[in-house]
Image (cartoon, rainbow, N blue to C red):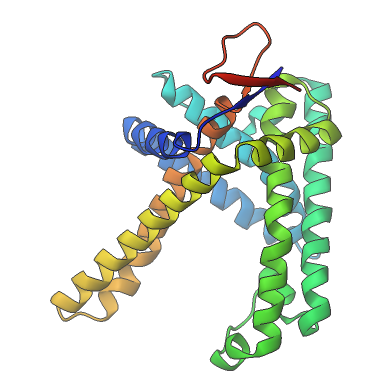
Length: 266
């Protein structure tokens, strides 16, 4: 397996590929994304351990969406069963994915635990068990500081898991090695990933701006709130349809020609 170093402009290629692939199979990919959201929501409803279980399932569920995108990019129709691809590839890989999920849940709880040291756990409680976000709470300095601490810690944490599920599933890499290789790939291709994220952020902001202007022009202040949630869900489905391409171009098998000029053996 080789790590492929791509130019920064590849980030926009990933962005466009995600949009193009989604609109090749919009019903299938949107439906699978909503099934993914429903699975996480149902898991989180289990008393006491629901939130932890949902976190542990996230790497495997994300892998399922990547596999669905891969199928759609090949002109195939992804079936609902593809969401559990991580647990259909054999006992060894299923066990490795379960370990990866447990590590993700534990690491995420540590991130929230660090934020709890700042505000006494208000931010972590809202995230894990829900609650009412009052203006006073959101505007409090402690809550905002906890949010920034969580975001700062989550960035390197997310880099560890960005490619890890796919490395475990498609390359048979052990969970620990997959985390290391994922960080290396993200750091070495940071320019492309930054442009990729900026492109998606720009699209989200652009859609929000259009909806706001539309509500102003039509004189319907509530229109934006009505349309924003389904629009955000659709954009999120498109985003998850693009993650596969970031992995596809960052790693190649030893016997495959690299999609970019520079490679480094992992």
